[in-house]
Length: 184
Image (cartoon, rainbow, N blue to C red):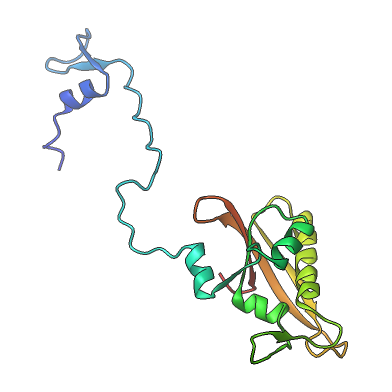
């Protein structure tokens, strides 16, 4: 297994020099010195690896798997108003179970909320509870929190368990993703 290695040449390549040292048995050669510095790591540690599959944030939003809360419009302003400075995405199931829970959809594609409720109000509740959870857990990239949702507008609430993760987006920028407990 090691017979293909030319040890003297390998040691010389590492920066060691052959030196006569008295007291060593006949035929034993000493190599002394400091090993050469390691080659610097490449800028991209994945260079040379074959990518088998990718699924970008952009693709997930286009496919409807994620809802981009910081796209243009009212939700972007609401996210900024809530104090968030990074892009926020929410899984479609988490969005449905919290913001759209108990709604009906008109033929025109508009959602009708139970009395006294709105998309803006429900999203504000989610963002506010998320902000409190982040403040209580500053030293982690994940936080868990719960949201109470009045699905029927009758004062009875269901509790939805959520978690969020901040991680890299498509260009390495920080993106906060909200999910139902159990989703990843």
